[in-house]
Image (cartoon, rainbow, N blue to C red; front, side):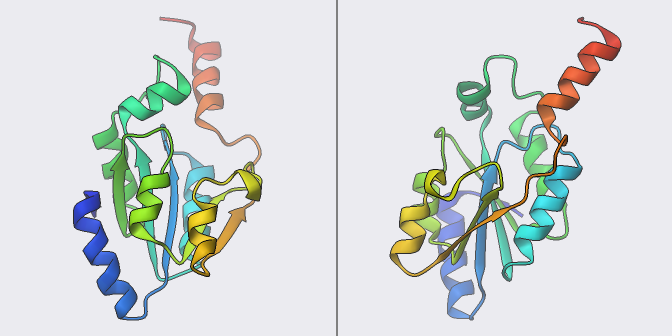
Length: 158
């Protein structure tokens, strides 16, 4: 389900009250690939509810440059929310999900293995109330950037 942050916060409070463990992860998820799918499935296995913070189009542009994202935010959100192991998708406009993490207060924060623990945004928040921070191994060769490079190499610049 795609929700706004103001909608999500009371939902999460109710889920926590019911004893559900909330997992949060985030990313651009531009051109969804097998690495994303395996990562999200592994993240969901750590708890009961998986929330995906999704960088908005403006946020992706600030991080990855003017040519990205390839897939618009609404479509990226729809694809993510259709995965059976993703419970909620929430868009954020900032370059990182710090404020979203502070509002959601997940039990478990997850990032890919290409992030060192000390560099995971929101780690301080989650650990301050006894939550857990995990990394999931990075799938070598699985990246949106590589897919884009392969398309350009195979089909040439348009």
